[in-house]
Image 1 (tube, rainbow, N blue to C red):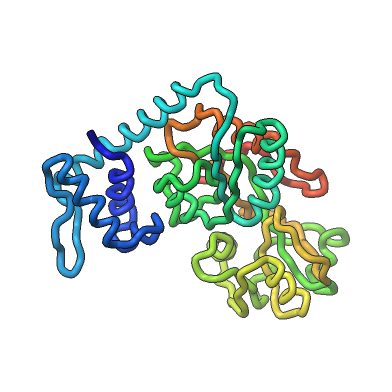
Image 2 (image 1 turned 120 degrees about the vertical axis):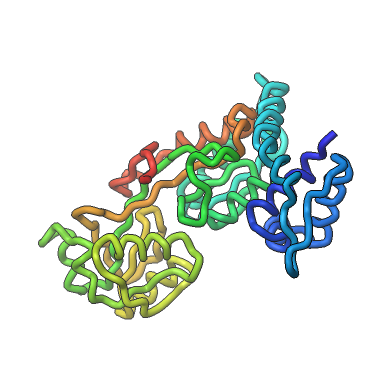
Length: 316
């Protein structure tokens, strides 16, 4: 009998490339991860890892096992859902997402679940997109609300089911009195190219929003001068308010009351991101997950945030 927990570790090694990286993503030690894989090999009477230089690599047997692993995982998820079909959602339900998605969607959905499903114990965790998928793979979360980046799995990845929940446009954030600030009413039609020669404030390395800023500027035909970096939108807004640069901010981002102006961008391509709900494939009909997806779809995004499009398909 295959221990699915050990199979999770092997899949993580295949996903991350090394035992150390897989162990870090699963929040275990490298020695514990190696032990799990060795024990899985003993259970199957095969060798799953072999030395390669200073590291290890998957054997042919491991690669053959992984060919069947996705189907096994999906069947297990479907079996669990079938066993609990028709039951009231109960037990632990773990949700994670990027910061703006937690604030705008997950938090109100969690409140609705608390009211409608009192037997459901909801846990919320903030996570960057790639981390969200790692948490799904390891079984540490049940649903991740993310935005796609080059570091996240493709929409057709057989390990996950991904649903577009919301399209969130990006606005240009400039200090009050900036030449582009008046264009929101007096001179509509600001494009990203109008800000090509400005100093830019971006999020830190490896953040998803930094990727969107750089990709949007490239699509608009310029490479931005990165003057400052920050980790949180409140810090980005504070730097903009002091006239130290401009930034792209998602419309869902909640900013402190500072001397800044959001400028709606026109033209094509108008930068936007799609928020995806991601789950392990086969788990859609689990009562808790089904209730969570329904609650997320039902969140009433404030009318004061125009331009948000529910359920839009993500850009290729």
